Length: 304
Figure (cartoon, rainbow, N blue to C red):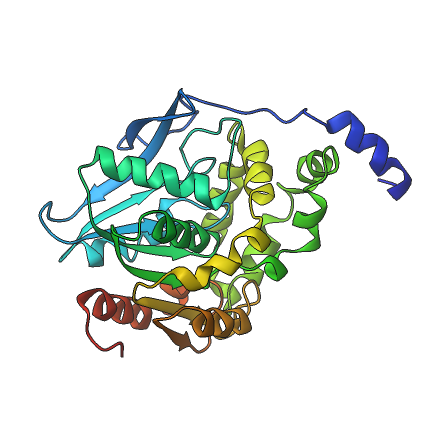
C-alpha cells in the first residue's frame, strides 16, 4: 500500500475491528472457564487450577499474544508442591475479547477477581513479558495478598514499546496498522524471540497462526497494546516491596537485558538471574535452569 493511502485507510478502519464474547470454534474439550463480571457485564475467563489445594498458591501470567500454554513445562513441575493457577488474560487464548480496558491495572483486577472466586487469599505471582506488568500491577493493587513476584523477561517500560505500538495509540491509525499487519509474519516474530531458531518448529508456528484467526483477536490485541501506558506506571514499580526474582535470557532480542538490569536496580528487593544462550522464553530455552531457580525462589531459598 502506498504511504499516501494510509491516512485514508486509517479513517476507513476506525471502529471496524470486531470484538467477541462466548464460545469460539475449536475450543479445547477440557477447558475450564470462570464466569466473572467486568463493568456489570459477564466475562468468560479460561483458567487451569492444578496441584494440592491446600498448598501455597502460585499464579502464572502469560505475555502479549500468548496463552496459559506458555507455562506447559513449568506448571506441572510447580504443581508438585504448589497449587498452580494459570489463566488466559482478557483478549487472549480462549478468554473473551470484549470492548473495554486492557491496561495492566484492569487485567490485574480480573486476576484478583478470579482468585477471589477460587477462594485464594495470599499467593505468589509469576509473569512473562507483558504479563509481568500485570503481575506488578497486582502487587501494587493488593500488596497484602502478593507474597513473592517472579518475572521472566519483563516488558514494563515505556521505551520498550516499538514504534508500531506508539502509532497504534492514534484513533484509526491503530485499527489500520493492526488490521493490516498484526496477523502477518508470525514465523518471523517467533524466530526473533528465540536464541536458537530451531526451537521454532512448524507445529508451534501453525498453532500461533490458528490463534490469530480467532474472532475478536485483532481488536483485543490493539486494545492491549493501547493499554501499555507504562509512562504512567513505571514510576510506581519501586513501590513493589515483595521479594522479586527476575529471570532473563541474555540474548533476548525482544526485551533486552538492559531492561532487566534497570528493573533490578529499581525494585527494592530484587535479584536478576541471567541465562546464557537464551532469548525471550527462558522457560523453554533454559527450562531446567530457570525452573530450578524459580522453585528455589518460591521456597524462600537461595537461587542457584
